[in-house]
Image (cartoon, rainbow, N blue to C red; front, side, top):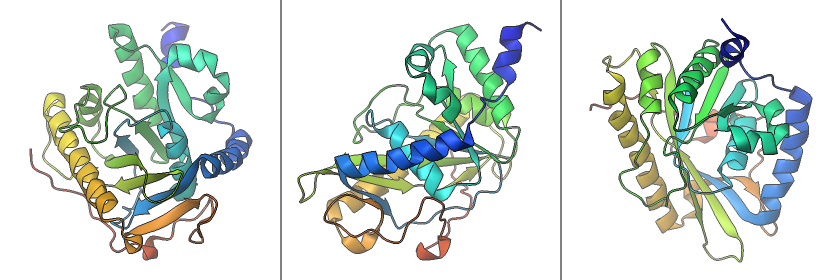
Length: 262
């Protein structure tokens, strides 16, 4: 086995102290640029197995929002995410934050990505964050068009949680924008009928679409009681949310693994 293949099978090396330092900066940075970061009160699933969080790719801010959510709700787990090789060379700091390089739109790049994912998700303490649309897309685009790689990952895993995450950036009544997020219903491979990779992709797309629809309805209502404030900018009071909390009792319900049918 050559060194390149061996490298592809290794999980990225994460610097805990660097993640902690970047989390402080990210907390400040989001608060500076947004009025708030709010999560819809529709349940937070338990997370006791390898987990793939897949989200719609709304804009440039998505990775920073995901890093905030990872630090907030999954502080004891190692989070990883792919990024274009060229972009990773430009922002080398991200290599120590759990990001790993990929070569999109190439067969060799796809194979290397699958090997890296296999290595990461071999640990129950690992999480993989993906934007399977592979491009920036309007949050209202329906249905979400996902690339086949997500289904290929689901088809290879027998006991992993696939958790949809919807994100929107919208203006309400303040000068600054609101970040709105919502976790959807988890799908656990092994607890639902086995499927081929090309069958998994539409199933996961429908799960993401439902999460986006729930978030859109909450955004339209603008009811304060529907939301938990995770990060507040100026002029707003945040719930007592610290970077290492996971208070599941504050949610209206803890969701159970989904049995979504194709």
